[in-house]
Image 1 (cartoon, rainbow, N blue to C red):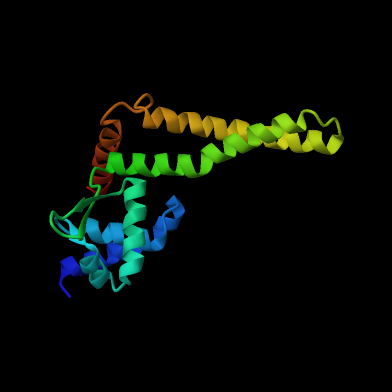
Image 2: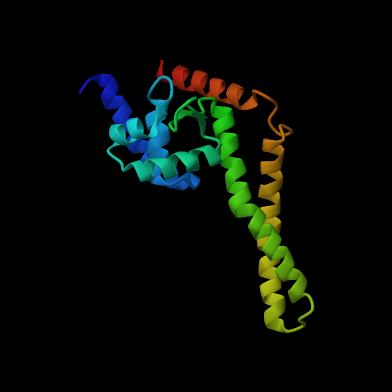
Length: 179
């Protein structure tokens, strides 16, 4: 195995382990890392063969990655094949993760907790008050996180290219500490 292949394999394994921390399935994370490790795009059969995964698992992972904004799909003209390429702009990739997590997790929490609190305000019992106070605590924390996510996604908190500047600064700091 060449050094390049070794690094590619380690990248796939690492992303497969870390993906669930971001809310991404291990299979989807592995496919994304595999795509990142190669130039150009690939079809499902090529990805499946490269990762030793079933075609169905790769198909589901690729659909998931497109939904997250972490991959792009393109139909091959005159064919049923679809080619997939990774999102390589780290700012867009992170925004895709934040946007999807917000839509899947925070938005439903806010909608439900707000509705439940309105219902509990009608109940004057001690148990209802205790639950309402706890839910209001959850609602206030998720509202702050949601506001930060909206600012990030709307380019208000971090101006365009702001994340790239932070990454570049971190790289400079890391290389200075090594030297």
